[in-house]
Each structure stands twice: as C-alpha cells, then as structure tokens.
Length: 397
Image 1 (tube, rainbow, N blue to C red):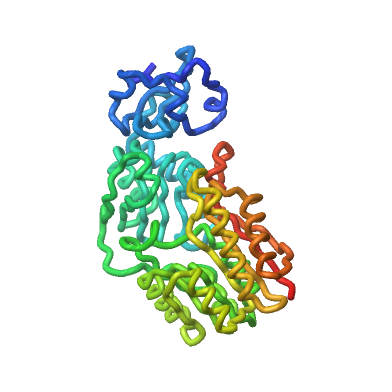
Image 2: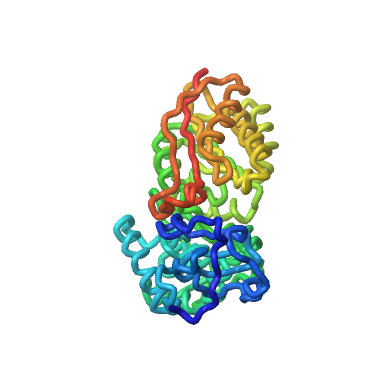
C-alpha cells in the first residue's frame, strides 16, 4: 500500500481496461467528491477500482477532462529522476534502432509510457512539451533524466498549444539548459531543414511526416511541385532533393518560409525553390486563375478538426482543400492530401477528400495511404495517437 491520496473509480466504471493498459481515466469515471477535488493538480495518486483494489499510480488533475493518466502499475512507484531515466532509456533504444542520426521524436506521450509528454530531439538539443499537470510538476527531474540518458546539452520547454490549455497550464516556454542562438539544421530525406526550437510551431519541425515526405519525393522526380501549408518546406525540400524540377511553397507564415528558403540554400536547391506568402485557399484560387499546373500538389494543412465539435466544419475544409488542390494538378499528375486531425478518422477524411476531387471535375486512384513515422508509435487504447493521415492520389484528365 502507498501513502498517496487515493482516487477511486465509480462502481459502474469497469476496471478491466485499465488493468490491460488503457492509460486515461476521465473525470466522469471517478468519485469526484470534495476530498478528491482538493488534491492539487499534478499530484501522483493511487488509483483504485470501485472495490478498493489497486490499479496503480497515476498523475491527477481534477480540473481536466482526463482526470488521471496512469503512470505505473506499482502504486508506490517513486516518480523521480531514476524512474524517468528508465522510461527514456526504453524510448531511446527504439529510436536508435530506427534512425542513424539523432533527429527524431524521442517520446510520443502515452505510446512511450510517459502520458502527456512529447520530446523531440534535434541532435544535441531536445524540446519537451509537458502537456499534462503531472509532467509539469515533475519537469525538473524529467529534464535532468533526459540529459543523463541522451547526453543532449540544450533542453527547451515548449508550453504552447491546446493540450496544455485543457489541463489549465500556462504558456511559459523557454530554455531549461544550454544556449541556443539560431535555428537548428536537421538532415532528413536528403535535404537540410531548419527548426526554430524557441519560436517555431510545436517543437520546430514535424518529424511525423518523414515517411510521407519520402514517398512524395519519389513522385516529384522530374515534375514541378506545389507544397501548400508548407511550414519550413517539409515536402518541397524532400522533393527537390529527389529531383523535382521546381517547387513552389505556400504558407501564411513569413518566418516559416524564411526557414524553408534557408533549407533550400543549405540543400543546394535554392535555384529551383520559390516561396509565396499568403492564405492557402486564396493563393490556390489565384494560381488556378493564372492557369498554373503542377505534376505534384501536396496539401498538408493544420488540424481543421481538433475536436469532435469541429468535425463537420473540418471535413468541409478538407473537401475544399482537395477541390482547390485537384484543380492545380496536371493530367496524370499526383495529389497528396494530409490531415493531422484525430477527430477525423481515415474513412471520413478520405470521403471528404475524394468528394472534393470529384467536385473539381477530376477522377482519382488511391496509390497509397500513409501515417506517422515509427518514432510516433500508436497506443492500442488511444485512437488519438494514430492522428496523421496522408492520401496519395493519381489524378486522371
């Protein structure tokens, strides 16, 4: 028995999923009385079923819809630097088996047994997103363990994003250790990218798209390509490195496009790369009016459906993206459509995308369906961890 606060499941809540590995307990599944509500957010508690049988240790936050995140089957487990080192060592061994260079997602939250924690590594630097109250409360031990296990000297805390807001956590980003004076170069798929670890989106680079960048790059050879919602040039730079004749990158962020241009220069493809700042929908419409056509068009927008309440509006947005993108593909060319919305599953996303292609007056064949890279493993109990979808289409006349 532990001496930690105890939180119990409601009698009607089945305990079996949590014994088998389900990592989340929702607020409406527990006894949330005055005593329980008084437990400070971020506390480690003992979770029990309705019969007072122990299920394990969990991070608790009474103010979150996800009230508990299971951390350890041992209710007395000490969540300290040694505990973090053990989890990080397991995560590191997987990534070292997958990649030759130390550039990858090191920790993918629940799928790496660190619920609510995301860590991306960029060589000698790493960015931590502590998106749960328990992780925020134990951030110092986590950062120390990260440096001990990986040897990185630069650790950045990224505290932006919707997930932290849902936990009631403030946005307080910055350096935890080391010094960082400029964006970090990252080699990937034959190109060099630049990640702004302090001021960029998320952790600075989207490693999840790495295999989809590579597949699209094969389709780009000998073709002009358009990369919409390009960020730092993920698809465009990989395509140019693989032999695309040209690449036009569109994004609404001037700083992101500046990093894309720096990446094109570092990759030796600047003479074939062009950036265009603007709203993606407006710019695609303008390009169609100009009569522009491309052998490969890639559309990788932000999450249009970040929640179930936004699903229908998000699907309409994905349909519109597909319609505008399809109109810019030359006969026999390729269209790549992506979604990072976990609320829109593959079937709904595919349906909306193909409807948009049809409304553009085009026919399509699905060549492949992609997901996130293996450094973003999927937790079997969390459909949310399989959020990324990519459709690779060949269009007819």
